[in-house]
Image (cartoon, rainbow, N blue to C red):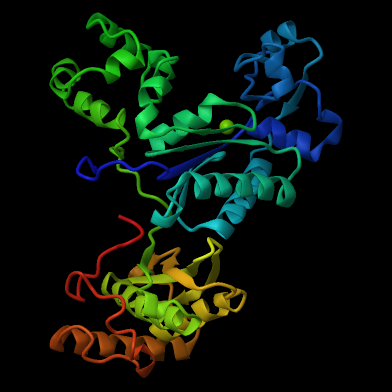
Length: 408
Ligand SMILES: [Mg+2]
């Protein structure tokens, strides 16, 4: 729990597909487009509608039994659920999101939480990413798929913002407008407040999210014990829900000093970051199956790409993969920020070993260098290519425990 980390605006982007199962059916079966559709595991009258298209929702169909839905909307088309098809679309969504960022987590088959990196934590960048995601989903997966996106200081608030406008919404909630954000809501509109908790709160005279928000932390603890404390901070944008994003990622980022704002300078700093991240990867006993690299430029242009690779944990592979991604980077302006990370980490002892003997050899070499640096101090030994960048990304704490700069 990070009650100690103050919340920041534009920290999380929450993407929620609208009427997902029904939209996927409308995507693959064009005759279903524009008409009320209900998806049910069993299509008999006692079966339950698990998703309704927007056309069906407009007629008043909610999560209910098939028979009931037919009474409300006689022209509704009932479709038998196809979980494997929805999982396929889920995987396609993951692939699209992965193209933009490795820092995301699927919270369900149709919900994704994306952690924005510090340089993207502003209105312009966050909105730009949201619009790019919407466009990519339409263009690369299906033109009938829509999503609502919420942007906020925490997963809780971003999710709540996403609920605000459906379908195809984009809503931002910031710390300074929390009061007006909560004002129109009912208690049960808050994710995590059910009718039972609502009753408990109403017994204490708390009748709305706004009145809950106005309570002092002491009152909250008196009313709800420990969960009261969590609610106090949760409503203020703190990430209290132990939310870990993405498969584990190890990465480092660095804002370039003026003398490193050239292609060569940026590459030398990136090399340094790769060696730091590679060191951590091995120290923590992981192998990685993906690399992500970011270069931001002075003219606000940004290069960001990520890709999967065969398992590796040695510096040479890490460098090679990063360089292969950077081939596509246009260096039209001066670079000001670089970040690199290894993602899709698996435990070394998971039994998966590299199929390439040269990677094993390179891994041994990297481990030997790690050992010498551990014994003799940070950067006793470093590749010649790092010369010149050794002091450009200084470790704030000893090399044995480099800090996370992107993930916390
Ligand atoms: Mg949804």
